[in-house]
Image (tube, rainbow, N blue to C red; front, side, top):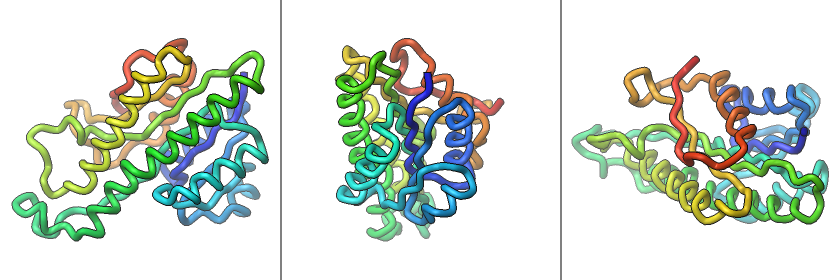
Amino acid sequence: MSGVAFIVGFGKGVGSAVAAKFKSEGFAVAVASRSLVPGEVEKEHGYLGVKLDASQSDQVAAGFARVEKAIGPANVVVYNASAFASAPGGKADPLSLSGEDFLQGVSVGGIGAYYVAQHANGGFTRLENTSHPLPPRVFIATGNALPWVQPPLPHLLGVSTGKKALANIVESCATAYADTGKRFYYAYEVSPQGGLVRSPDPSTHAKVFWGLYNLKEQGDWAVKFTKE
């Protein structure tokens, strides 16, 4: 059964691979990012393009409304937005990170993810009244291992705070909506040793995300995988 997939945080890496995978499986695909040029992705890939900053609630609301009006409520929402900044003082001085960079990490990892999950959930609920049979309804966040790294990496304070917030959002939603059929995942690639990866593999993410969509029940909300 095909449906509608909305990838928030579209770029040349993971977002592009995930969008292509779902389109190849017959989905109508919408993509969004802060720098996206809607006409270009529509012409090159056949995606509905939406320009938005996920940390701005009004832009997220408008983006979901546009997608729903054009191709219907998304039954798959992928949150792939990211931000990276390292403290200039390194591991010995995490508070050398500027307030702006810290806020960006929290805004992208936590605040933006909350807005997107909130609107994704609203669409999932509306599908109950408009789609028969009801398709799988899945929210997938692209994560990393930072919430579990010990000892912590102080120079990545902004990024890790954002990812911990993202993981908390997903875990809370997976728990709260477990009996509704809505599913929420924090999926993250690790090295063969179980640590952080510098360059996430796009094709592996696409395969894993497609596999999560096809699960029959929630299972673990935190999904760890390695490059294939």
